[in-house]
Length: 527
Image (cartoon, rainbow, N blue to C red; front, top):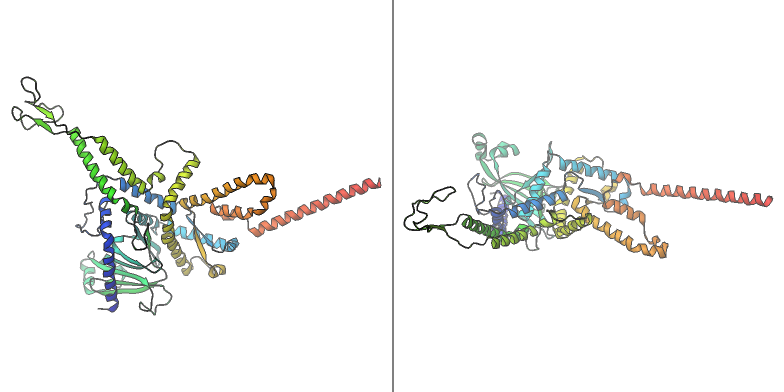
């Protein structure tokens, strides 16, 4: 066996052992909280996607959908520009040529993300749903020759990964299945194992296990490969044969996590937190349904003699023998004393705990008293405070690598055109301007407005206090925070030239006025 295959399969076994710690929880989440259950530790027959736990309460499923949709529309809303590019050096952002290039690059990438052919909107939503359900979610980004960039959500059941010393995921093992026809489309038929070649002709839909390994380039792993930072190896696991070896400039698997601790790789989700409540609410709802059945259709007490059996207990039915000759009932309902109010109150309380764990009451405005615009903003900001850590992680761990990878692909392929020299020598940064980040920036603007309100009384005492503030910079920062169109803002040099012209015009006017006054004085003196 090839030494690279032996090393890869040995490490895969180790990663599988490490992942077993979370697989049991993932399986329970899939059984209780997902419409179509997935397999992590159990195996069902092909085509059987039904849940095995008999889930009857959908509170958690609705909560997952609400939070996933809120994050999707709040961070990557396809109907608006949800990110911007700018230079880390603030002064370079005043360069019109560089600003126009970055703006065009941003628009080109947004076209890629919104293009139906790239499949990003749907695949991105699947990734966010996975993050909210299980903790991790994965998006595969590949630049396919002749077709462009394609995005595909990868189910976490196929993934095994590990972090480097900086808590960044840099090694990904993906074990998945491909049909013989798909394998033939991906790799030359003559390079495949004989069994796969035969299947291509006789059983094109027969599936085979494939392992895709992506790991950082090192002296031990493909030391002669130049220009790439990651090594890619596809292995036919069933026949222990390497299908292809290549490289990537950036890791094609972009993995996001909702939250994590320093001792874990796969992270956690809000669904982890409420899993005990989800189990309890299903048991409780089952009990309430049984109690309701006892109340609406209670068991009947029947005399052991004189009643015609079987008993016909349905509307408009006639029960022969139901009364004795003296009118005493021989059939009576059994009152079990079930109190539905207690169960309903307990159920509502647990369901609220589940909704609160997904911040539903803060994100979704239900029927209630009307609120002012200020109250709505305050409520949204409260939700952002709770979601802040998760949003920050999604931006830094998922969106930033995603945008950077697409930017690099476009830049290397020349799709942006000539790269400005200033951009080659300096770094750019990504600014998020979707609805959720804009709400976060609105807080800074409110603080500035409060600051001005606090300073206003001082201006009445000493107007020179204004000399402490650079209002030009403040205006540009506010415009930047609100994502105002860049083409309506004048270049600072143009503004300086305009002010210089105005100052020169004022000085000329003053000189003219002084000359007129001097002429009037001379004329008066001569008289």
